[in-house]
Image (tube, rainbow, N blue to C red; front, side, top):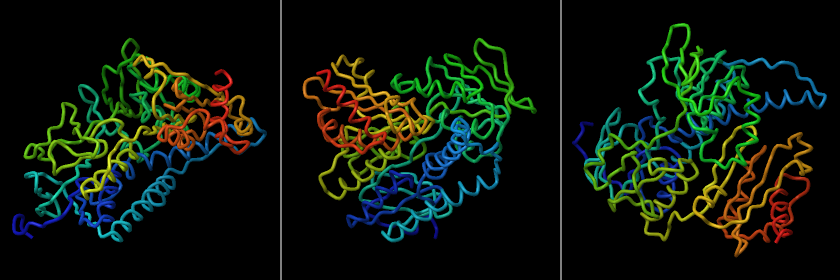
Length: 463
């Protein structure tokens, strides 16, 4: 068709096929609204499925297998040195993990009658947009949902145009296992992918410009991980900036602030992500992103333009897929006229390193910064029978409690399986449970989940 020959009418146009976008479209369809998804790659799942959460966790599972085999020597079990077949590993990640999940999402879309249009969406007004690319067309909508996600932050001053300098998207493709890898950024992306490459055989150096790994995370949780990666990585430089990168042909020469230059085979830039709101034609609407590109929304995920909603990373922190998915459902329900709001108190965060970190609700540092009185209960996994059977005593369960009501305000965990265990913490915070409720709930023995009960009991004994 020729652009402009026909304008298609739809109830809801969803811009972006990531977790927030497809969740919104699916919920719209369930509520009887005709929804279409416009995605540049004509795919569902977004960065999370194709280049982020899922492939990185698949690779972290492999890294965990290698680490477990190495630790088994302490138990009298020898497996020998692992041999890595990169081609087979890439195929497993791409076809059996990412591919299978992508096909599943496409099947769900078909079953719900949600069409996915390939192309780049550009708003022309608060009621219409054009699709540029292989499937050019114009859409007129009653409502639209912006779910365009985020992009990796570039290094200040830029990086040299070299395939040796990777962002997280390139890193999960496993182009090779470099002998020497420099990771710029000590946040969760840098530490997770650094863990993968170290397990596969790279000598990993991490540079973080702030004074600690995982800036902003409770130090009680970070400390066990910091001890672990000090042994896993070749070097960790805190409070250090990379002042120059240059591709010499034989490698990337990196100059680190206050240190002599070093040469690396590859460099991973993992200094954060930024909202992706540029080039959408939002200036033709009443939506005005802030200086960081973030689109402000209310509790219904509605923007300043009443016909436009926004969900996921493009609405700012925390940039987490599960937050986007919840927002997508809220936006769809609000558009359908149902009472709905994103008023969740607990948005869990997980760092899938070894050990894992997870937290939700109010943290102890946040409480102190706000001058809010809290009581804190800690249960070290060194006293856990299940942790002992796993050969892992480096964990911790931490509860942040309101001293007046006994209500659980926040939960923090570090240790194997913390990402699964945080669900109990999120349930406690979201439903205003008290420490007494956790202590009185029978937890199976021996399990790591008992640590919630033990931490709560220790608090009550001291009351």
